[in-house]
Length: 418
Image 1 (tube, rainbow, N blue to C red):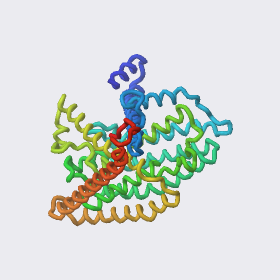
Image 2 (image 1 turned 90 degrees about the vertical axis):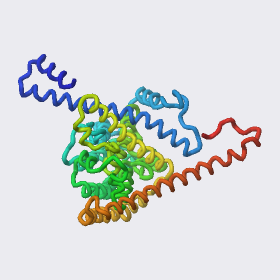
Image 3 (image 1 turned 60 degrees about the vertical axis):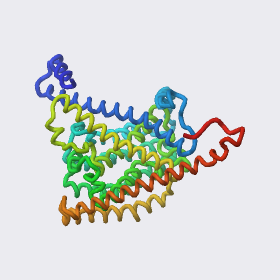
Image 4 (image 1 turned 90 degrees about the horizontal axis):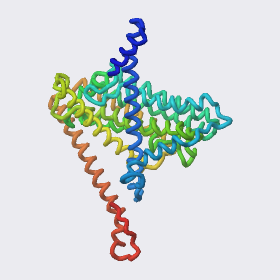
């Protein structure tokens, strides 16, 4: 459709061949960018409601529940309110930097969608160095944060920008080395190549390939949270210290761009972990060749199913990141650096070196390889069982005071925790 519109525009304007040849490609790129933006908007909006509801349950309260069924339309009300608010620019601000910073900040996150594979063939472009591009392009984000901090002419905003620069530079090292382990195990930097090097079943994922890659998943996930200022690493916007950090002077739609990027970035974090360690869009029991050779409605069905698989895995990781935010306290600045340089960096270096040794010495499919996969699966099951038991114990402890009052206190409120 996009190419057809571009060709009609070319014939209507009577453009020369060389100029007109650019239009179809430009139309496809603009269409892909528009689809990515729409996806970010419709993901970031509902996930704000989801996060606030999870926060309410963690804090033994309800959360938003007025606008729409169970408050599910609260994000639309918040977006409309932000759109109608006045866009204030401080008189002493560096106006060009202040105005442009939110768009550069948002653009750094949106550019990552170029290489993220949403499905078997649902990817804007499959770069041969896709993973390297993803690591590099995310550096634009810190430039936007620094511009916002400096351009605001506010010391709290400037402190937040400087903290973000130090945090990103530090945590990019363990993040890159943990992803290097993925590259060593798969032999490619292509995001689609990494997915196709795995399989649909859990024991075919890189997460359960061996215990070292199992550990690298958690190092990578923690470093990604820190790189993108998620709690407990949200020092650049620490409300208790910096009011709101680098975006303290922003209002209206420019403030909303920061929020768009913050919640849209949850998808980037989850997608990177899904592609690198959880098999991406791979459908259990279905080889990629079957999808590639299908045609017509079968091809469309496989694409939809692969997207649902990918979205399901990423959504579980988004929920995990949200629970971390509302469970763990914010670290101090010195603790944040200690976690990076004394723990994550050595672990990432040792893990990537260990994966290199295992790739060289242990052939895939050998008895030792299957033993390592079994050990990794056992570790995963143990963590899941421990997590469920701990969550259930916390839930029962939280409800105990209400159980003691129920049926005994005539003033006991009618509200019951779910």
